[in-house]
Image 1 (cartoon, rainbow over the protein chains, first blue to last red):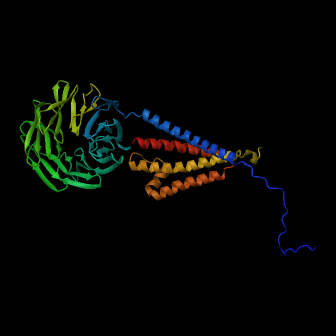
Image 2: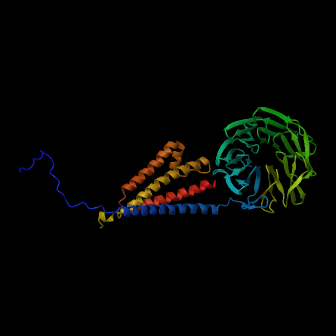
Image 3: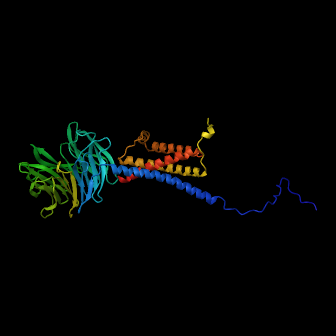
Length: 376
Length: 114
């Protein structure tokens, strides 16, 4: 029987080899295990590196000396200097205080008691008293002490960003801040000007072409005008309406010197003291109607008054080395004692339900700041 | 006199190469983290770039900075991967990744503390 013809070029038939063997599990899992170990080994190297980095950070924090001693009290905080440079320039707004510790600008959150070092920057050695608003801290810093030119800086609490906002040829006043605005007095080409910055829009504000220590609350800026060596009037400017007017201080004059003033809403509060007797009084005055009321009378060596809403706070001397921090509601009621302090209170401030005061006994003890809460 | 071939770096085995691979991946990721944290720290205004080369690029803009920073580390990692047969490449990568991890950990804690 003839064999069937195969087609030309057709591949030869494949001979049947040995029967197919099932695939063994081979090196797969072993390889995977090796891969896992390699990954773990690499992660270990990174972890050791990260541990060194974290250790370096913690060591740096432990050896840094800018942190003051912060102790919680029954109703607030007591912050004491530890560097011996002295606290000064206390500012308060809501739940935050800012102050100077030597040339350092510090910020403390009254809810957490956590302090932050805001300035000065690397190249600066001198600062001026800071101002605090709802969202911003504003301060001046300069390359060296004794210079009158400076840079204005701000710290945004919301973004945690620190940035320069202006350059001042001559610092003629401390900054004041409220909401998103900050104002100060500076000189350019020999002319004094009250200017400022809208911190959110980075827009310059020109308030007035005159000298003054401005205080801002909302859109209203106030400063004292002097004549014949004393204060003759308070000037007010609404930065949103380009409107300026004056308020004649009720009863201010005679031997009384202005100890300071503050502004909240439409109310101006100011202190007056007789330089000879040390006796003084505190007056609240409406900036629209001029209606005035005496907040306190017969105060002794009182600090400049502070106002927020209808609450006025100040500190007055009660004994040789003892002060008391006082408060009074403008809506009614008599004055009340907030705290008694064994030391000389140089600043007492109120904002919201918080009251803060700075105590400076000179060389007798380290300076300290104390805060408390009062019912709103 | 020792022959050149005997003086060459000891060879890495397959396991060493796998470790090298993951170290280089980590190094590349940490480089990105370092770039982002540095950029954020500079934006926050509390830090200054102490590396003059990077300072120049940060002043030039974001695109040149990203291109340089990612480019130079990518070239470095590719070079180390090309030398993966040598154990020196593994040690070098481990050292670099460890240093980068330390820098990034420090920066991350610092930024969180602000």
